[in-house]
Image (cartoon, rainbow, N blue to C red):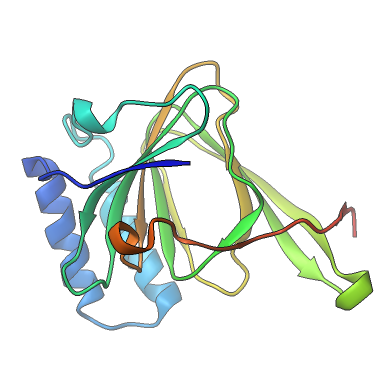
Length: 184
């Protein structure tokens, strides 16, 4: 993944950031914050100019992350992700709550549960979800293990909001998983 530093957000993005800031200041539990931020983001996904041209540039080798905003106190970040056809994440989980909303195209997500321990540890695929334009979803650790990909034949643009300072950390990924994937 290639990361691009934050620029000044466009007016529509500034309104989104303001709304997220208001939600985060409520200091609700992570899962509730993710749900509220997802609803906030969803209300912006159909707006023209939400993702300005400078945040819509992809990379032919890997999905590209544009840090749009990092809150000064480190409480959240807004990131535009650009996925060329076939690009995907490894199976991973996150360091904090996370919200993803599709602006253009569709993100395909496979969700997993971690089962067993030690030598019997494995991942079980529990859901396949396709999020199209205008759809946002949110989740919080634990239980946020997934893989995200662009299964489309065109570029996908999405907005992800994380409960962490991605400008400083560079990523929201806590760990990637190399475990076997089984049916049960």
